[in-house]
Length: 224
Image (cartoon, rainbow, N blue to C red):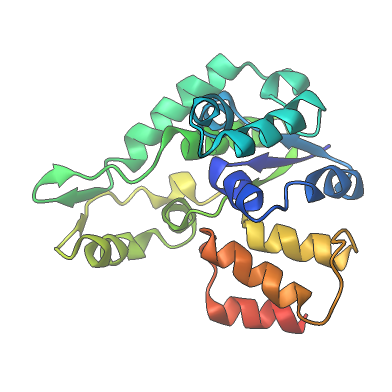
């Protein structure tokens, strides 16, 4: 079994760009499971459902859940309560990495950490998985934690100190951004729009809706 875990940011990105409809066909091509946690569901369905501005996007994601394209961990025998417990543990670790003015800086959300918690459980069961996440901080936590202090210092325009050294805790996770998902969909002919500029437009669209992809990375993808 192969599993793609979706964070809320990746789903919101696809929704805002009108690209959620690639997921059913992409799931068939990949021949795997698309999972979301209850924490992610809360961010993309439950909470925005009562907000007029975001209701349509919530309804579209809800439809993907009802049709079985997106599934909850229970669909493969994993209890969401267990994931929530593991999520709390990971949040406590990550949110004690950095200090600003001698106070701990919260850098991750429960939705993001729930994806990592689910990934950990899947990996422990020998199930291949990858997390679809656009947010830079969580990716950096796993891939380049030593740069977190500099990143946050630039964000807050004041010194942020990296305190923790237990980087190996987050180093095992694998990620993919909505940008790469759209690239795969394009290469597998799952995008109905045709033309020479379509791929470029798709990649830039994901960047400007929140995917932490650089212009240089987009240029590389365009040439592949």
